[in-house]
Amino acid sequence: MHSVAAGQESMKVSALVLRVTAATATALTAFPVQSQTVSHYLERIAALDDGGPLLGAVIAINPDALKEEAASRTIAGPLAGKAVLIKDNIETAGPLATTAGSLALKDNVTGRDALLVARLRKAGVVILGKTNLSEWANIRSSSSSSGWSATGGQTKNPHAIDRTPCGSSSGSGSAIAAGLAWAAIGTETDGSITCPASVNGIVGFKPTVGLISRTHVVPISHSQDTAGPMTRRVGDAALLMNALAGSDPADAATAEADKRKADFTTGLATASLKGVRLGVLRKQAGSHPGLLALFDKALADLKAAGAELVEIDYTVPPEMGRDEFTVLLYELREDMGAYLRSTPAAKGPKSLADLIAFNKATPAELRWFGQDVFEQAEATTDKPAYEAARANSLKLAGAQGIDKLLHDNRIAFLIAPTEGPAWPIDLVLGDHFVGVGAGNLAAIAGYPHLTVPMGSVEGLPIGLSFMGAKWNDKAVLEAGAAYERARTATVPVPSFKRWGE
Image 1: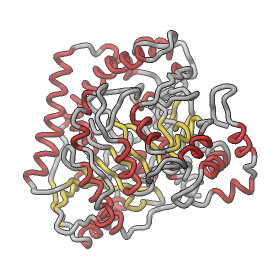
Image 2: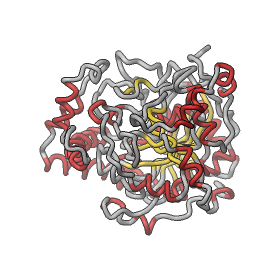
Image 3: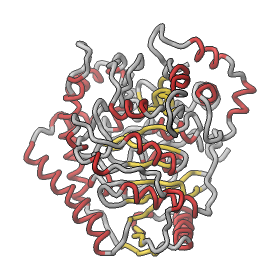
């Protein structure tokens, strides 16, 4: 059973979990339909996350989920009663701690809802529980294994349980692929929504930075952090965006959000690609023959749907990533300290230096990899160098990156494969990224990035990225929905087995 506060666990939840037998677990491996009850999801979590393949996607269950579902019946709206999992770096009021995957925050029960969670609740969403993640959103070490945290262990990919779920929203991606909830909320600084969505075969949307509040979300970077929906369909992501988007007086980045938000579902069902010019980032598609063939099939589908394809010859300037890393190091130390000092508990870490000391004193934290990135961040204190790095990385990704490519080529969106096939989980050597995709452009610029499943390579899901201009979130979702309807490739169903079995 997943963790809940001592003495707070609902008797109904316990009874539901205890009813899961071996026969039920076998039956639950079938992919679920779109709309299910909390009871169904709790049984499925018990069968697939706590038992069977032991996915490790859900880190804690909300003991009040059944009560929230009952209360949601009095709320009107399309989100009422929908069960949603929340990444465990986003605060939720109630008995559950917000740990960011770290034992240092195992007692971080703040009693606060992040504003984005409060908005979901207002819309009638049922908070089903919290998802595992790459600890500290994958910023602690340069040799980490995506999906591992000291609190939740290693999350697995339901399409191949010996392969990565990617990160840092690993549990959110794995859970939705496995049908453990209707939807999940992830967070991204650079690739942490889109990569796990791609390799788990689901939809992931990283909106324009500043469209969704970051208040009471464990941070990395105020320049690049955002939350976003992870779902089975583009329409579900748009529906969640209607609840999530909006200004927050406590988050200066969201000052324009009220003016920029819209009904993201309007026109989605009839959105067309006819006459839409798409910039094809061929160099960012990698070299794997199977992936290239799949990408070509997606391009053919887009062309058949009326899109005009424009080949883009673009090479990512190496100084963009170099300067981004400087920004993330500086802002991690500053922003993490500010968050930790905002937590109500008198005890516990209050700075990045405190986290470093805690990890050194806690063998379970450093069992598989170290904290070299934390240590670099603690030593990155040159503010003028940071400000210059931010200005340059933003310019290269934005004005001289996406903006220039869209303008010079008269295109509406950039497209590319989101990520390569999921690599084997390797706790000893860490992740094995293969250099596919161009999501760092949208991440650094803070622009919208949507990934939609486009098929698989050897049974391993691959996503197709749509990236657009700042605040053009609705149009990006419309393009993705139009592609979703035009797609002819088969979207894989999770096997819940090791790859090749």
